[in-house]
Length: 108
Image (spheres, rainbow, N blue to C red):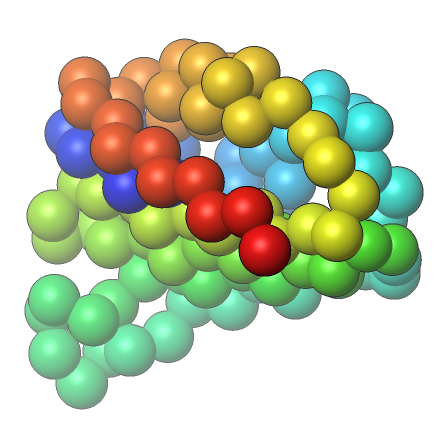
C-alpha cells in the first residue's frame, strides 16, 4: 500500500506506528511472531529520513517505511495465509489519515 498526504504527527510517532502494527495484525487476524522492530534512520538525506517497521507474523511479515518529508507511508503485508486486503487498506488509510492510497495485490 502506498499512502499519500498522511498525518505527519502519526508518521513521526514511534508509538503510533507500533499501535498500527498491533491493530493491523488483529484486524487481519495475523498472529505476531515476536516484538516489532521500529527504528528511525536515514538521516543522511531529508528524503530518506523516517521510521521503518518490521513485524514478523507466523505466515511471513508486515513491513513499512514512513517518509516524514513527503508525508507518505509505504506498507507491505506479505502472507501465505489469506486475509481481507480491502479491510486492511481501509483501516490503513483511516489510521494514517491519508488522502490517497494505492493498493496493489499480488497472489502467488
